[in-house]
Image (cartoon, rainbow, N blue to C red):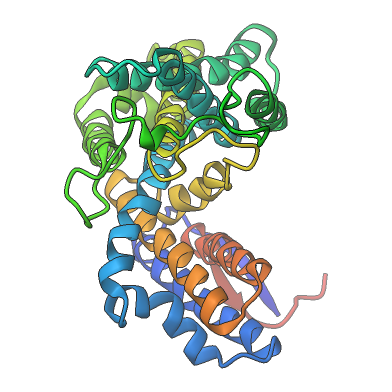
Length: 360
């Protein structure tokens, strides 16, 4: 008989081993899935993880690595603050969309003005849009004790409908000959989030992601608010006795995660995506949840996890084009990562005990 026995304290060894073991288990299970689809599992895993970094076209894929990783890291950093405090923002995808809408709308409002002030205003508007959208579940939780998980998640669907309305209505390109979508912001120099170094993939969103990692590390380890976040997540009753205000902490965590998600949306719509369209969102807000937990809710871990998840995006696209793998298989492969992460993470707090069942 196999039984789970709770450990007196979380295992540091299993805490460190969980992410690499989850990645390894994902490769094995993913390889079996690819084999069931009639593909060479070794070739598929190599195409996803090796070729984008060291293959024939690695010079192109390496730049794309930063492009894909930046929004994941930005969103995951914001989510991790709330997750550490037991505040569950599952609606970062909606905040990402609102940041793109508000930031993009500001840029389009100034078109065709050629001024340096346009892009900074878009950045502020993008962060503010994500912040306001996150304030809906935050204030409802503070005032009426609603569940922030349900409210933030359901608001994603509202944001998607709002995105479609904007792409087909107020923000539609008047010179687009009837096609849905806004003007291409990447072709509007004052509003474009172009590469800072040609061919590197480095744009202002990547810079913001690195700044967010550093700021989160300092906040969690050198600031009283970071101590309150960690204390609330580990011992809620002790936090209340220590004078932590749970309402203010809820507003801070949800507001910060919303602002960072909004920034990610703005940098994406002004750069790689280029325009506000009905299919602008690609699930970064949900994938960032995997990134946050894969990185153990630690800023540096999230940085590495974001790069790894970006690699699966890029390698997955390569596997689709070169090996004919369906997009659903790649999405299932990415989902396996969270599944195995949660499964292996159980051993952090529990150990397995083998023996015969005792008869009462």
